[in-house]
Amino acid sequence: MKKNKVERLMLTERAALEKTALDTLQTSLGQGQSREVVERAACEVSDRLNSLEAALSNGDLAAAGRLANSLIAISRQIGLISFAQVAGDLAGAIDNNDYVAIASISRRLIRQADATLFQALDYVTEHLSEP
Figure 1 (cartoon, rainbow, N blue to C red):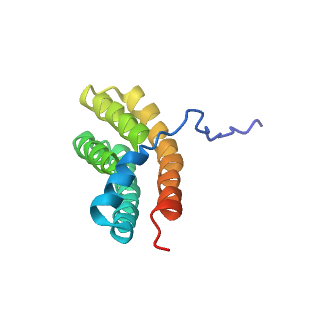
Figure 2 (figure 1 turned 60 degrees about the horizontal axis):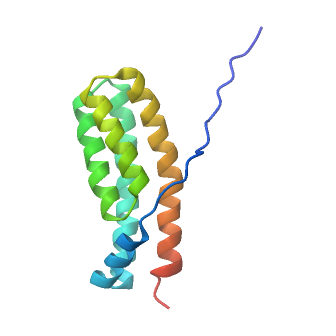
């Protein structure tokens, strides 16, 4: 009997982090507060991604659309440019009820989150930490 094998796709595109957004946060809030904002935003993104996956599994496109739009707003605030673009693609697919695209883009969004969130957290650890 042949077993089905599930493979996880790896992110092949470069995750874009707009460091000027993070630097602007640091300038306006200071190192400690800007780091806290980025860490809180990363947690929010993670929580909303989990909620998004649940909404999509339950077929609740209205909730999924709201969550995708909130992910766009949060990610732009902390410079997660490529993540925000993919979240925008997902919001568009949801608006169009394109179920094939929704499935594909939602998986891509999760891959982007893995890469981009760690990139942002690494940046704040290296550049926005108090000496």
